[in-house]
Length: 311
Image (cartoon, rainbow, N blue to C red; front, side):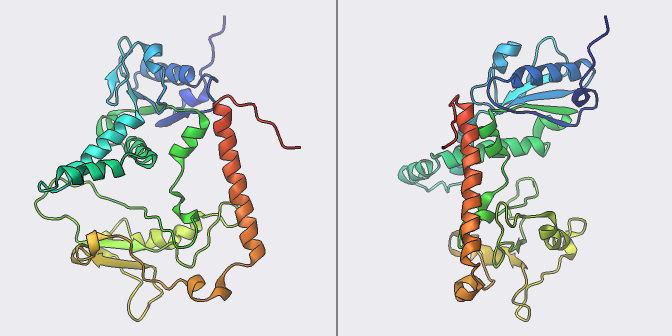
């Protein structure tokens, strides 16, 4: 009898493997089998579930935990479950710990209530997910990280990039880049560099999607190889420059150290002639609604709904 061939995604596995799809198609079984096969080959493997209703514990006989747990009988294999509720509570505790010691119980309760919504849960879950991809913590010693994902709709939300670029005009989203530093009595931050990729740009999901070339200027100016030599493109003489730095003192002097910062003139707010043509706006609305409908179809399918096309 010929041995069963090893699938290419296992035989030449990348560091990160994602098993995703609708509920009930066998994601957990395949992810577990792939993780065990890699571990049997001498690799160090972390098997991660992003499903709040995961049954990895039943598959492997190991209690779910938000910390890596060794799987008995499979040397080199550990498993971990990203529990959104646990992640959200840990996130809330980190925020509360940053409040001044003089903060009253009422103030702390107010902060906790503000962090009790679904948005906080999603942020916390994404934070845990991003940490795994960044190789922070114990997973950095693994050769492979295998993700047994939640059903498609939930996974798409987890994997989505920040959607602020596609919000209505006037609504801003910030993508922040941090360096991990040890604790210090004085602030590590000396300057905050900001690149404005929104003002007078008009990205949409389909008609004018964000492309790699749209980020070329930012990547060049970010100057990852020699950040000490960065040069701002904004100045009093160059008021249209999109790359600007603020000192630590500038930021802390702002009301509540707010990062709601802008300096470029929004042409569409100052001159209605700069607005897109009505037919362009209408087409963008249609495309956004269609994209949203596709997302809801995926979620409805995961929930077992039988979808019918309108007559």
